[in-house]
Length: 194
Image (cartoon, rainbow, N blue to C red; front, side):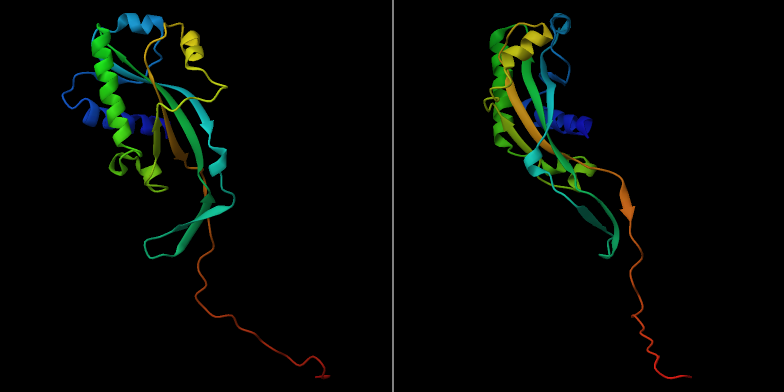
């Protein structure tokens, strides 16, 4: 599911923030070595944190129906996860990086959800609204400067983008076929000798 959300993010950024194809979109860790190898304009959306959105957890099983509406199976409720991306722009000039970041910021602000047509089928069957938040201050337990330190890179302008997406929980459990005949009750007199 994560790689499918990555592709949805890539399509959204390429279509709305980079319609002229002025930069490529990658999902690499922006380490010092990686940055040294960049020779073309790049938007990097590094997935640095995955946490369950516990407040959205549901208990019990969900019903799976066929096109006619008949119950075919039951499956566990999907679990929702916060996918946190560190989005940066990489070019030779800081002004160009700022221009690219501004374009990506505008694109993400226009889209409070990932476009439903871009969602992978496994996610679209659960929800049509995969929420995006951008540039919201991270919790005190997590610092962007700490992330840069862990990567061994120099601090650089970045956007903190969080996508809350469902992760389908498998397997499905088949159910018994529907009852097609009414119940029959057979009553006997047990008080007689015969």
